[in-house]
Image (cartoon, rainbow, N blue to C red; front, side):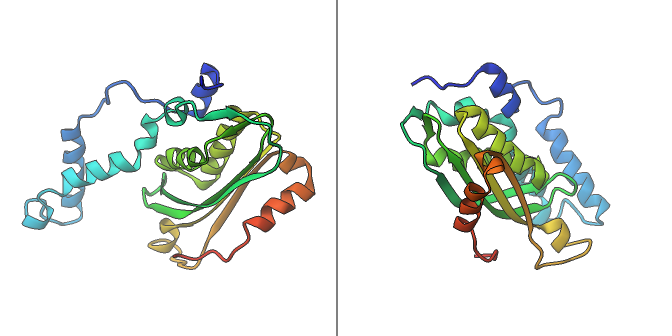
Length: 212
């Protein structure tokens, strides 16, 4: 089946980095080496000799969402179906990176939509969350991007996204509040307009946030 999404929608929802990076991998590794020197470390000692290479490899993986598109990700997994009840995938593990300090954001996403003639493969919902999480992010934008992607792909009756996360930039440094969680939401269509539908979604995702 051909994916029902226009090129304009794809451009809005995805960042595709096809052009060659203006910075080489060697230059990135040199930048890490410079940081190590600035910390007062010896990048030539045994334990740090391969650290620049490892850090660059890790950062490329953690930001691999920049090189993905919704079209490639979904691979046609949008299907016509006569369904009109809520579809909810909850407790999707999220691992992202704060764009201000490049420190981890750890949490979960709860994603629901009410179909309007089309449904999406359930695993693709998790993959959409993962694609946007694997970029430098702020939680508010991440939540909005997930909701906008589903809205653009399916044109459903409504979309609801709640993200609950703890930010290491608030835990490991700064105010150092280890028990703090941030909750963001994006409600579209009937979830924004109908309090009963919104309340049904919120009741289905209720739990006490905690590390597992």
